[in-house]
Image 1 (cartoon, rainbow, N blue to C red):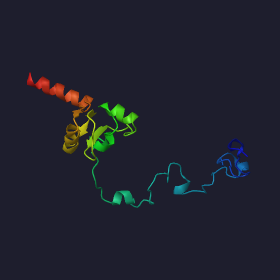
Image 2 (cartoon, one colour):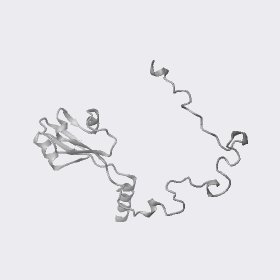
Image 3 (cartoon, rainbow, N blue to C red):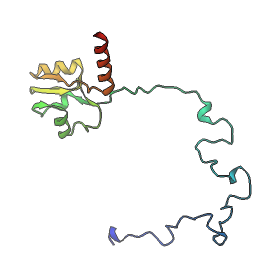
Length: 164
């Protein structure tokens, strides 16, 4: 027995019943919806949260919370994790070392652990403790500027135009 020869037991996979395909099918004419009434009509009862006309729960409860659309979600790397890396440590080097996944908006360096070798770290943000720990080991921290969006470019151009 191998995985390529596995089959579902007989009768496990049944075909979907097609309704409204003639009287001989057993589900013709009204297609199993009965005679008349609200449920017999098309385009009804198919949306989530419908409570028979009563105000649905998701509309009765108050809204709360806030989601900042401008938030930057950063990968976290501790200073102690840089031990063993040498030379220039940038997001690409961190990704190849398996310290970050690289699917977020940038990298932040946090001050946890000790560093013995001097490395140059290029990250998007660094805490004061992390910067001190890297500089104590003889290295330095360089910040990568945040990417400028089209909106920010347009805003800057508008400000420059207004100054003229």
